[in-house]
Length: 136
Image 1 (cartoon, rainbow, N blue to C red):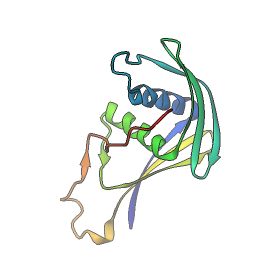
Image 2 (cartoon, rainbow, N blue to C red; image 1 turned 120 degrees about the vertical axis):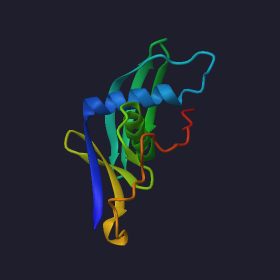
Image 3 (cartoon, one colour; image 1 turned 90 degrees about the horizontal axis):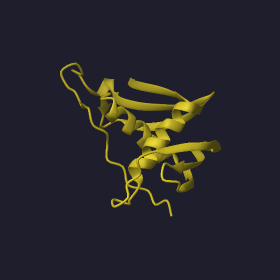
C-alpha cells in the first residue's frame, strides 16, 4: 500500500512557481534578479510535462526557455520550502498534466513494508537539492 500526496496548481499558479524558480536559478551574483514575469506559457509536451515560457526580468532582460519535468518538480519543492510544507525526502516525486494545470505527486512509502509506520518519520521542512539548469 502506498501513500500519495498531491498538490494541484492552476496554470496561473504554475507561472508563479516558474517565476520563483527562474529567479533562484540565475547565476549572476553581481547583478541578481529581483523579479521575473512570465508573459507567455504553453505546454510543449504532456508526457513528460514540458512547459515553454517566455518572460522578462525586472531589469528588462528577456528569457524564453523550456522547463522540463524535473525543473517543475524543483519549482514545487521550492514552493513547499518557502511555505514550510513538509516534504518527505525519500519519496518519489513527479508532475502530471491535469485539466487547467499540473499536479505534483509524492509517493511516500510502501506501508506494507513498515510494520510500525506511526513511530517513524522521514518528513523534513526543506526541499531536496536539485541541479542548477543551464539556460544558455
